[in-house]
Image 1: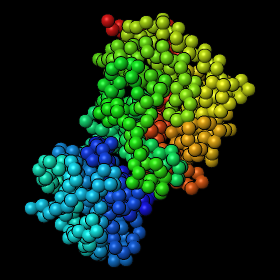
Image 2: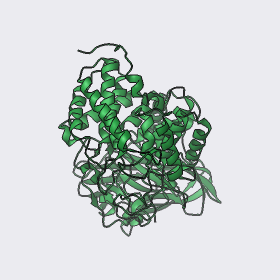
Image 3: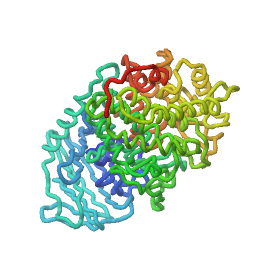
Image 4: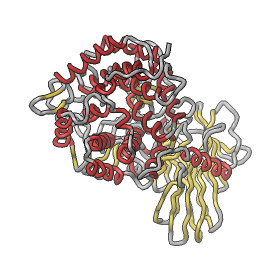
Length: 611
């Protein structure tokens, strides 16, 4: 059986990633990209679906940590006879992707064992293993190849590679697993010690660029390192998570493939990077967005592959039983075919904020933005599947309409702030129409609150974004009433549900954990409202949910007191970074994003005019 979600740590090379459990078992790895087939898939099945374990033979006490300011994982095993440190990392690529594992004995001597089970194609395909002329083991199947080099003894046993060895104080054993194509020469060996030094130096240099030095700076740094690890270096796209089908409820069916890039993460991610000082990463993320959505506006999708791929058809893996039996295991994501109006607003918001950091690039992509608005102007009155990608009937979701308003508002503000040219008067008319409709049909006077969809009596955590995007100020009585209703209906032990799945038809069986990003949004609202102590209490609860190496999943299951959903989740870490900056900076991301239309509609002279 796999380990609990919170028992995993992440290692990665900014093109793919692996999950390593506390017991030294590497249970998930996709190569050569985040969304490639897994060669270790025990995370979603059992050891026969592929894993790589290095651990003491005897019972051991376990402690682990990341090396400061890096993604290098160190796991200490202490036995009765001694202690060893397992050092796991993925070097930044200069050639073939690889994983390096170093076993270093710190005291006494320890008997160790290795169990390597390679199964390509998501745990299905058993490779043919041969010995290379330099002594390395080479595993081949179809187009895939893995090469294991080590100075430890190994042998084949029951379609796996096993070994036992002893390390004594002051000695170490090295393992290097390299991926390649089976139709090309076997990748050459590298220098693991040199790779370790270079990897540590690279991460330390990267995180030294962080410009946030306030309270909880180490928490911000760990989340930013995690976010960087989930960024696909060749294109700048950022995956939502490196995993698929980790369930939102133990044993449940809400299991989705998150190894792709969502447009709706755009603005939150951009602001987190901008406010931390990573303008290059923010610009690359913006560039990925624009390249990816380029084309006919009526073909805009909510989710794309890391290089902008559009065909992400969803299918189920019958030979994987799921994480602790949570099936089905899904590859691809059917959300690509859904209509979701909010992504127009997210894209427009991201482009607008990107202009604020690029003095010589204000005009960038405004023609694309205009084309998208022309299409949105035709469809904004239609129902959609909303921010949560419900698989039930399409509805007029309030949040979706608010984000349609954002799309027009940000274009107007770009004409006002940056002197860009477009049909601003026409956009203002549409913006006002959307605003009036949302306030009329999306607000329930009996509840004194905005509701999830027109005519509904249910609230939704996405309504917390209404003041954060500037649709209404946080002091508006309708916002205060909405926050109050969310506290009453969706709060569970100090955390926030997305919505009440037992009372909303979303096309799936009810039940899921509390959604961590939504709890961050409530803290952001508290901060804007001057409820600072309550905001800090929410933040403290969130911080307590991080696992021992500082990572968060998408959700948390209150009854079982465990993390659930795909892991680690970029959106959770982005929301955490933004909330910390909101609480402990004078002008955090929430203030930056929530400038209301009342501010922008004041007559201001543009700073300059772009012809």
